[in-house]
Length: 198
Image (cartoon, rainbow, N blue to C red):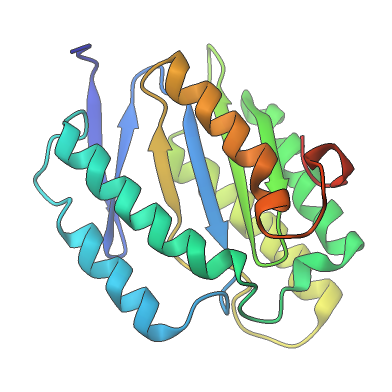
């Protein structure tokens, strides 16, 4: 097993890990994207991650269980799904690409009606933590979306899902997942036809 330096941090109720030289798969969902009972179930799964070594098979299995439960409901299209609006989807893409100012590349992503997936790669010289990167991405895009929609309240769910890519097999599998998500959700017949997937 490859040993790399990891740092665990807590954001709200979910544990996250910073991995030296890590590449991250992230999922951010809109504030209204999941029913409360599903959110509570996901919190229960994530509590199981406390104290588990992030590189262990048990950690990988719990993360997969969490992700599959979440994704099932997200793809069903719960909530207002405001990211169906092309203007709002473009805001998120601009902010993903804008992470390059912090030496973070959004290599692949898809903007779904109520959530986004992305592969983020901090470049050499990047001094920002994953928490800093997510705060910028969610803060700036959320502010711009709220401004466009009007009203008040949060745009994004406070928590996010992240998983560091352990090897090239996992990376390639995740790229395919991101690209095929709009197809699986019934938005398009081919991922290349989805304007918000790269």
